[in-house]
Amino acid sequence: MSYWTGSEAAIAAANAAAWATYIADHPTAENGGETVANPTTAWAIPVQTAAGDWAIPAYPGMAAPEGCREVADVEWADVEEEG
Image (tube, rainbow, N blue to C red; front, side, top):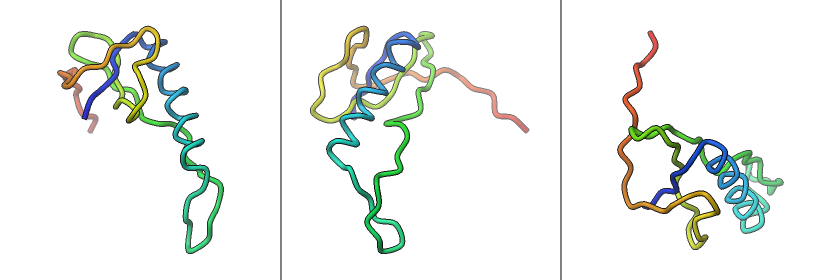
């Protein structure tokens, strides 16, 4: 798996572009045996990296959008769990 990394704004734009491509590729989904419009609302949930930028999984076959770079691995930021 590869990832796109970049600023929060660049990753938000990349996420929107990947979502649009995903919906175009998969416009319908199965729900309880019925075919319905694909209910997916985002390609991925952006996560902050240890370097302070943001990352999402790269969309297969899509080049890294402007402002992003594609990497093979990401060092994730340490996140304290609530509770």
